[in-house]
Each structure stands twice: as C-alpha cells, then as structure tokens.
Image (cartoon, rainbow, N blue to C red; front, side, top):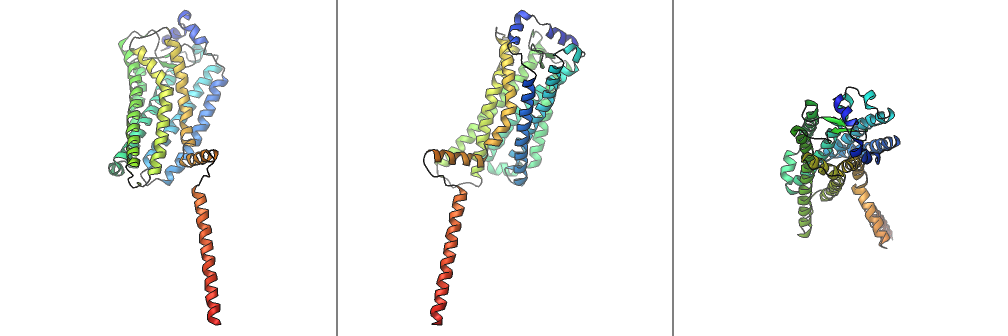
Amino acid sequence: MSEAINSSAGTNPNTTGDACSKYLVSVKVPIIFMTIGIVSNTIAFVILVKAYKRFRQKWRASFLLFASSLVFTDCLGHVITGAITVSIYAQGKDWEELDPYGYLCSILGTCMVFFGLVALFLGSVMAIERCLGITQPFFHSVNMRARCAKIILGSIWTFALCVALLPNLHVGEYTVQCTQTWCFIKTQNVTLAKERAILLLFSFLGLGALGISLICNVISGVTLLRTRLKNKPHRRGKSQHVEMLVQLVTIMSVSCICWGPFLVTTAMIGSSYEGPRTTSSLLLGVRMAAWNQILDPWVYILLRKSMLRRGYNVVQMCRGKQAVGHSGWDCSSLERSIKSAAMERTLASMRRQSQKT
C-alpha cells in the first residue's frame, strides 16, 4: 500500500497537476465542513429520536428508526473522515511521513466507501418502507416492526462494510488521490480487471439505490394523488404520509444532485472511458458528495409538518389571506363554549327568579 501511495503522490503533473491545483483549499474548509455537519446531524438526530419515542408503537416508528440511523451515520462519517482530513492538512499533506505504511489511507478510503453506500442504501430502504406503508398498509403494519427494521439496518451496515473492505483484501486498492487530501478506490492508471470491477461495483450499487428510491417515491406519490382525486375517505395518518413523502423526495433529489456526478464519473473510469476532464470531474463530484451529509439533516429539521404548516401560513399571509391554523380554531371554539356557558347560567338565574316571584 505504501508503494501505491508513493506512486499516486508522484503522478505526472502534466496530466493531473493543473486540475488538482484548482481545488487546493485551506485547512479552515474541512474544519468548517466538519463542524456544520456534526451540528446539523446532531440537531436532526435529537428531533428524530424524540419523534421515535412518541410513535414507538405505531406504524411511523420504522421510518423514524431508518431516518435516525441515516443522520447518525452521516454524523459519524463527519467525525471520522473529518478528523483524518484535518490531520492530513495539519501535517502539510505529507503522506510519506504521516502514513508510511498506508494504513491511514486504507482507513480513510474504507470510511468514504462505507458511509457513502450506507447513506444511499438507507435512502432507498426508506423509500421502499414508505411505498409499502402507502400501497400495502396491512402488510406493512403486520411485517414492518421495530425488530424487522433493526435487522434491515444491520444487514445494510454489514453489506456496505463488506464492499468497503474489498480493496483491503486485494480486490482493487485504496490510493491517495491527486489533491493529496483524500483516499479512495484507485482511479488513475486503472489497468487490472479487479480494479475496474470494484469501481463499477461501487458506482452501480449507488446508482441502483438512487433508481430504487426514484421508482418507489413515484409509486407512493401516484398512489396518494389517486386517493385524493377519487375523494376517498381520509386514511388515518394521511398527513404523516404526505410529510414523510415530501422528506423522501427531497432526500432523493439531494442525493441525485450530490452523488450523481461522482457515481457516473467512477462508472466511466471503471468502463475504461477516461476523458480529458475526468480528474477534474472526479474532484468536483467528491466535493458535491460531501454536501450530501450536510444537507440530509436539514431535510428533517425544516420539512417537518409543523414547519410546513408555518410556511404555508406565511405564504397565505403574503397573498393577503388570513391563515387559519389549529390554534385559531381552538381559540374560537373555546370562546364559543364560554359564551354558551354564560348564556346558560343567565337563563338559569332568570328562571329561578321568575319561580320565586
């Protein structure tokens, strides 16, 4: 592994040096990224854990468990990869001194593949879970228990870890990339079949997860739309279905935008198609993918039912219409109840006085 690191560090500057020099940044950037990611995911995790405790015995619990696992995984990824990246910057990107045997590069590459795949897999599993909850509510209520959700989570983490460990088992390899700030599956001078295979496996798994999310969310959205158009009676928890579907569609959109370029570029490299801008595309793609772990938690922070209702009320007020919320309805009902009670007391006292006279 140390030889792979040295060969990567000594890549021909005429081919990659110019592309890499455009992306040189200060150590403040990874520190800011790591801090924002940890804080955002922690806030979202607290919100989801409170919601999970509230709905623990209901149909919504499995979705909240998957969502909590997603933000927890993202937060853990920020802590581990961020700490390694900051130490690399602090060492002046001198991999020969910091990691002479290549162990740190293997750890960083394994973490990047593992946390990336887990985030994509969890997004697709959440889409499948909601699709079953909307289209097959009876099957979902019977089979999707907390125990089943935990088994699925364990399977996802185990499978992603197995894929991430393959380069450490000589199925491909992890190498330092041209900016000397991160490690990933070998993407330069890829000649062996197993090196191409691991790149294609990673990219196809990621693209497959995005495709499954897209299909399931489309089915869920069409089902809810048909229910509304046919004027069927409101199902229990329909508003929660809509809330979770909005969150899922947003997560899927963010994942496609952030992960799509990187996954497509790695697939092109694995397919022996390397254009003149492949290196710059790869660097841009990995930086976009890093934003996914920062944006995911804000989906749960901002796209909650209470926040959506407040946003709707603000839009209505901007349009000159008075927003009527549940609180307003409750207050008017209370006022009517008080007035009715007062009138009844007045009538009763008048009757008593007439009886006395």
